[in-house]
Length: 262
Length: 304
Image (cartoon, rainbow over the protein chains, first blue to last red):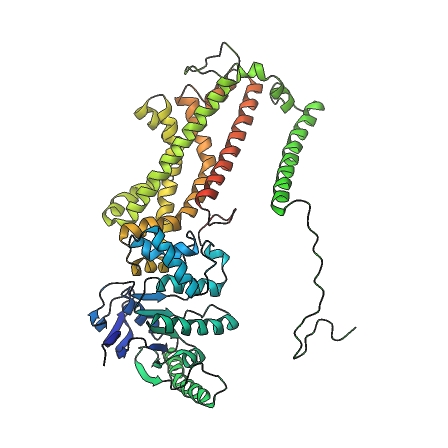
C-alpha cells in the first residue's frame, strides 16, 4: 500500500487560557488519509475538528503525538497543504487573478507565468471571465470558488476545508458540493473537510470520521459505500443519515449534560 | 379581490408577466448626484452669505468689524498688497499682483503637505516597529501615550527653541499633529487585521517582510487614511498658529498682521482663502485615497 498522504498518530491538543485551568481540546487521535481520499470530519461544534485542520496545516502546534504528510513530519505551514476557511478571506485590495496568484507572487514566479496559471486555475473553477474583478463584486459562492482556486494554483497534495459552505445559502451549497467533487477528481488531491452537516458528509465523503464532543476523540470512522452522484432518495442514504444522527445525538446529549453540571 | 394574482402553481414557472417599463434618465445617475451636490453646496454657502449681507443691509452689523462678503471681496487689489513675498514680519508689497497671494497660499500649503507626509510615513514606521519589536514597545509606548494628548500648539515654543524661526517649526507642528495619531492607529489596526489573512500568507510561504508589505500594510491603509483625513483640519489649524509666531510668510502671518492692524477686510479675505484651501486639500486627499485604495467604494473609509 502507498504511503498515506496524511498520517495522524495519537495527536492531542491542550489549550491553557490565561489564568484558567487547561482545556483538553483533542485527545489521542489516530487515523490515516490515503492519497486522493475524501475525508469528512463530522462532529458537534466545539469538538476540536477545526483545530485538527489547523494543526495539519502547520498553523498550530500539537501538544502530543505526531502529524506527518507524505512521511514528513509537519513543522510549519506549506502551500502543499492548502486550507480554505468558512469566509473566502480573499484580499480585497487584489483582483481575483492576483488573489489566485498570490502564492506564486510570494514565491517570485514571473508575472506573465502567474497570470497564465491564474487564468487556467480560474477556468477550472468556472470563473474564467472574472480575472480582473474585485472580490467585492463576486457572490459568496463565487468568492469561495476563487478561494479554492487560490489554494489549487499551488498544486496542493492535501486540501483542507473548514466548514467552507456554512456561510452560503442552501441552493448555492448544493451546487458547491458538486463543484467540489469535480475539483477533487481532477486535482487528485486528498481532501479533509470539516462540517457539522450530516447531509454534506454523506454526499461527499469516502470516509467520515465522527468526533466525540470535547475532548475530541475519534468516535468511529464510517466508510460511505455509495456510488456517486449520491441520491438523497436512495434508501441506503437514509440508513447512513439515521446512523449519523444517532451517533451525533449521543455526543450532543453528552455535551449538554456536561454544560449543565458545570 | 382576485385570489391568484402573483401566485405560481406547481408546474408553471412564473413566466408571462410583463416587465415594468424603465425610463432612461436624461443624465447618468453619477453625474446627477454630483450636480446636485454642487447645487446644494452653492445654496448652502449662498444662504450663509445672504444672511450676512442682509444683516449688513439692515444695519445690524458694523461693516468695519464684520464686513460682509461683497465688501471684503470687492477691494481685492487693495487687499492683495498685503501679501508679500519677502520673508519679513509685517512687510507690505510694493507692487500689486496675484503672484504674492499665490506664493503665500503655496508656502502654507507646502508646509501642511510636507508635515503630513512626514508624519504619516514616520507614524506608520514607528507604529509598526512598536507593534512588532517588544523591546521598542516597552521602551517607547509609555512615553508616546504620555505625549500624544498634548496639544500640538503646546509644542510651538519647543519647536521655535529647537529649530528657530523659519519653515521648520510650522512643518514640525503639522508633523506632531498627525504623527501620534498615526502611531497609535497603526498599532491598533495591525491588531485587527483578520487572522485568516495572516494564515493565508503563512500557508503560501510568505516571509515576515512579504507578509507586512503585501498583506498587513494594504489591510490597514484604508483606516490610516481615514485617520489622516480626520487630522487634516487640525493640521490646517496648527500651521496657521505656527505661522503667526514662528514664520514671516504664510496665511497665518497675514491674519495675525491683519488683526494687529485692525484690517477686518483682510481678516475675512484670508479666512475665505483658508477655508477654500482646507476644502481643496480634503478634496485632493480624497482623490489620492480613491486612486491608492481603489478597492474601497467611495465614502467608505474603514477596512473590513
